Image (cartoon, rainbow, N blue to C red; front, side, top):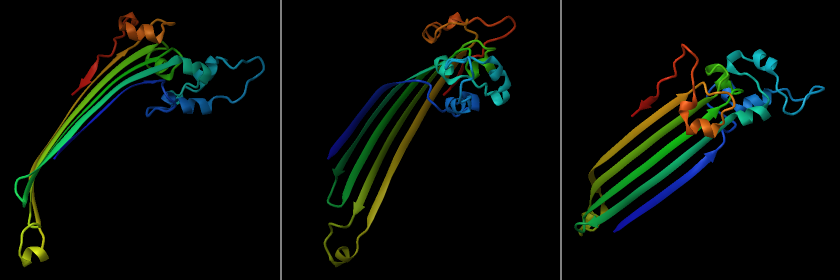
Length: 219
C-alpha cells in the first residue's frame, strides 16, 4: 500500500499592514489611533504638521497624518511554499509489517519594503531620507521514518486470543536548513519612488562620513 500528497502555494502580499512587532513608530494602527481625530480651521484631510512630528518623537513614535503615512510605506512579500509527502506499507508476514514515510517542505520568502521620508524608520534611522530593505529567507526540511511492527493478533492459541501485544522498532531522520539575508539601503534622494529604489539600490547616496550598514546573512 502506497500513498503520496503534493501541495503548492505561490502568492504575493501587498501592503505594509496595520501592525508590526517592532516599536510603536512602526505600528500603523497605533499611529492612526493616536493622531488628532479632528480638523482645525484651515486644515485639510491631507494636513502635514511637522511640529506634531517633533513633539511626538519620544520612543521613536513620530505621529504623522495616517493618510500621508500610508503613502510613505511600501511593502510587498513574495511567498513560495511547497510540500511533498509519501508513505509505503508492506506486510512481510502475517505478524510483521514495515512502514516508511518521507516528507519534504520548501518555504521561500522575499520581502521588499520601502520607508519614505515621513515614516518613523526614515526619520529615526535615515535622517529623514528614504530607506529600502530587501529580506530573503529560505527554509527546507526533510523527514524520513522507517518502522517495523510485530504483533501477535493473528497468531492462534488461547494465549494470543486473550492477550495482545505489539512491538515497534524504527528510526527517524529529521533535517532542517535555514538561510536568510537582509540588505538595508539608506539615504535615497527625496522623491524617489519605491519601485525605482528597489529596482536599483545603487541610487542611494549616503552623506559624507556616514557608512551604509553591511548586508547580514544567517544559515
